[in-house]
Length: 470
Image (cartoon, rainbow, N blue to C red):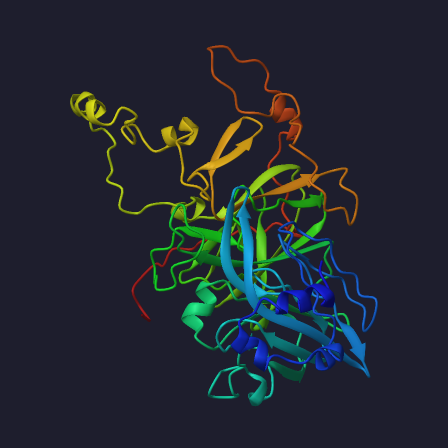
């Protein structure tokens, strides 16, 4: 992380017009430390050392913004600025964000906290911050021109309000929104309950991340902001597989995952190996009578979904968006389908002109993954990532839930690949079968019911004997 010294050094690189209008060093000295973070790794949870206690979240490939207490007010400092985000090894994007990253840092508070957020604008244009889903005074809602004046380049504005209800929220600009959100300006906000809440359970692991998308041509680094639907980079917290960290938990942990969607389309988020319930939205916790088991939940545009489950199945379980094009990287959408097309008659003619020409797509697109085709600089393969059994053939919105018996409480380090018990991995059939050890490992029984009926009920049916009294 970087502090005020680096912030002031970076401020010297602004244009003369911005520098002339900027906040003075004396004024900056009275603000909370403008802490910055540039590492794309998942940072450990920030355990509170002041204010009300709470169980912190872990932001996937992100971090939580520190604060200071000032006469009972929890003060934060957000800096809107251009950033360079490593979206995957070998691929960096020039985005806009907050405090060195896109998305910006997660802000964590407790229900009832008095909150003050200083927002300094280091962008080349005006901005604002909208606190998506929160109950705030109208003048703190962050809509430029409607509820406040825009924050001009070099200026610092102050937002003050009470965190009135527990839940998961987002923040993003409401100024030149098409440009600024397309460039990556967004962040997560979590308000923890101040006392035990009847609809909010305590969990052992609490993850959060934002769904965001970009249109970045192969070989370039800056998103095309005019794109409305044809995006080619689908990301979690501005990271794409294999750059998305794994979610590492201890077997039998109760796990919560909070997912917010600030893309231009919906995303059905699917978890392998477990069932979950949707326990909350950005409107608050869902009533327990309205919850049901799922393995996929659709997160629509501008929504948040909070899911919870018991991680009782050991292994490496995929978690991903179930729209197949959203688990690809830098995918062109105007490539003709060549499956089943015999190209042999034209290959020789083409190679006479283009010696390095390769036939692609004749038997499907999987053949492209191992080809190691030359790519433009600053571009990642469309399907990438290596697993213990070969290529994973995924990209984009894809990660892995790693459940381990011996993962210590509070330990978020990657435990490596799962060591499968003998007889529990799919294998090639060769005509002979022995007693399958995998059945023994699974105990040979169906899953137990959550609650057995206390008494058996026999249903008796009596057919009607006539048509009277109809």
